[in-house]
Image (cartoon, rainbow, N blue to C red):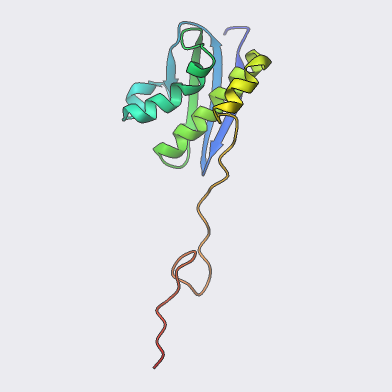
Length: 130
């Protein structure tokens, strides 16, 4: 095991991503699969790589990610935050550029709970006057 491993956590909705970053050639794996296979669309793949592109570190680090919970989009958001936090541990001077790109903010939006006496969180049963 390498002596210089950085560990960070990212969360989004109900997804959690544990990120292990070490110096390497730019390999990114999610749940022991290449991230290109795990995340199906190019737009999702670009979101995963965005923190590394902002920091100009796409070929400097190998990133191993364990993601679980939620759906694919939630996991992408969690991975993105985890990578940004790990990069911050490597170099604190990256903070302004990562912050300006909005990569250090944890997205607080989550599904609202269903309330009793209603069919959903906000929806009401149909009102009948007579």
